[in-house]
Image (cartoon, rainbow, N blue to C red; front, side, top):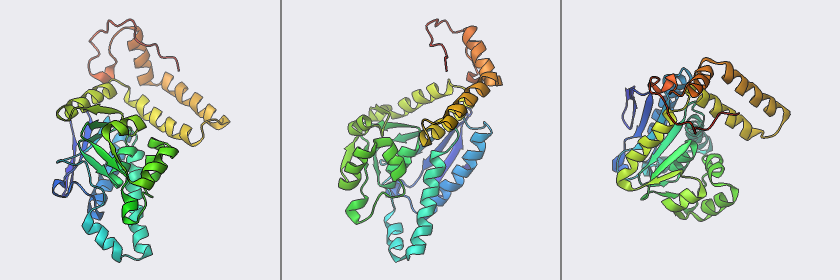
Length: 282
């Protein structure tokens, strides 16, 4: 789709967008330039995903580390900023986290190594995290007199309040197994099988209805804000009703009863013999 200095955005023929950090020489640490690039990429992805041009987004990076967090040179510059300068800078990082978190389509984070500081926020903003067994995570900010402030809503949502308090206050390193147990990571893979694990998860995502996935992601965000209210209950009823009468909803139900793959899998002629498939009930 486009190519820039510190990151790369590509779209394959399946509609998978690959957003890749490309600063391996500094462990993919991010600074104001990379943040600006990623925000520009995300703006394009929001538009493309909303119009059904992108099925899913994979966030990854080149090199040994996923991301070391904030770039040292950027941090040195921030020391010289006044409050207003730091506030403006922080708002750009907040826009990055919000933009990634609210992408309409499914998002997958590929973590091959260390993810420190703000990089934990990037992972937490993605719907699914697939990590190497060599991956490590750390909310390291308090060790240098700072706080994981901007990323805290997303990481706390992933870890839960009690575990967030521990790891944000201690800056302990979480190994991959711990991150899996705490819910920050969804699937672990041997290091040399990480790409295969990512592809396996993408195959699962591509089996779902693109429209239904977008609607479900938006619905879950609403439910999280107000889990049990009359407005939420009415909204959930309207969402399922709209999907049932939509073209994709009708195709999905028809393909289920006709024991074939739905049209969005690009394999609608392949009959499915599995009579034990779960019946949709919502």
